Length: 289
Image (tube, rainbow, N blue to C red; front, side, top):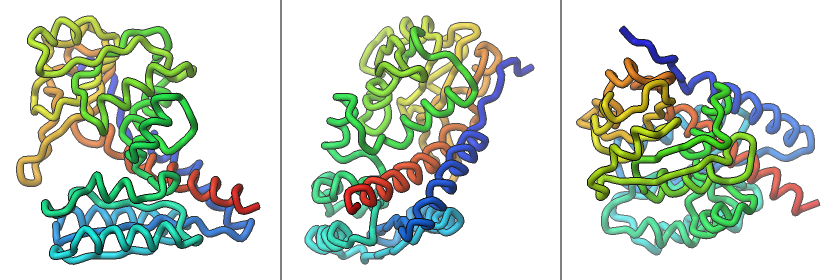
């Protein structure tokens, strides 16, 4: 029998997107139409599907969504030329380079050519530096979504022990920096461990908030969870179309609150993408006044 309180991401995403829609309306009233450009390289069906979802959401929120699709034989120069065009276009405020890109291309090198203020993923090295220093800038979407999820469900974070299992550049490391910052929805004691630490369960078992971000299916079992803890499942892998989460569903018997197997962190990640995009439009508008 499941005892944990479920923490679905959809209500959190809806609240964030409602705020984004209001901000878009205010921008449009001032004659500014926010624009989120997307770049797809190659013919990966899943990536194309993600782009369609984001374009549909953009249209619903009132964004323009220019799109460039490069073939799988595109060169690094081709990709960086598209990025340069978007950088130079005053009508474009945010840019998303859909990941992954074909293996012969260098995603990190391409990302570094993007204007950091237009980086809606929050993954540009300059934006990571801004995060580390507590400076304003686009935040990595999944970490920001996790903070928003905890805040939405009024789960106390300040002063509590947070353990993150996973040290990846897109999730574990930036989330640790974000939740350690001095803010009412953060200000935690944060520990980052990973599968290279042999006794990692010793850390997860004491966590008041446990975030699984290892990308190892089923790595978190009930014996790894402190009774009554909040468990956020953020790491996943896919086997075909089947989603394999880090957190075993039986952990709901021990946890006090837990994200569902499907529909937890995912919806909040997409919402934060659009929050970054509307902030980019607001920043560009302020600079032009």
